[in-house]
Length: 70
Image 1 (tube, helix red, strand yellow):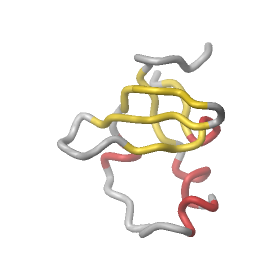
Image 2 (cartoon, rainbow, N blue to C red):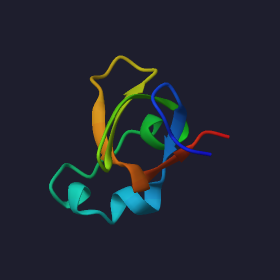
Image 3 (cartoon, rainbow, N blue to C red):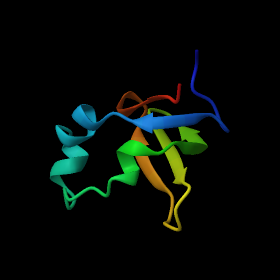
């Protein structure tokens, strides 16, 4: 299946933790990032904007760092 706007996805811990983006940010990830679904708000090129179900601002991650929520 293809990830599209409105899809529910989960963040792949191993791909995020070993990424260039992780090296440029605080690496103390909250558990909700990996344990709860996120809704795809926008897709631009190789990046996807995600909104989690907790009161936090949306985040941008690479498409290869997420997978569809099963």
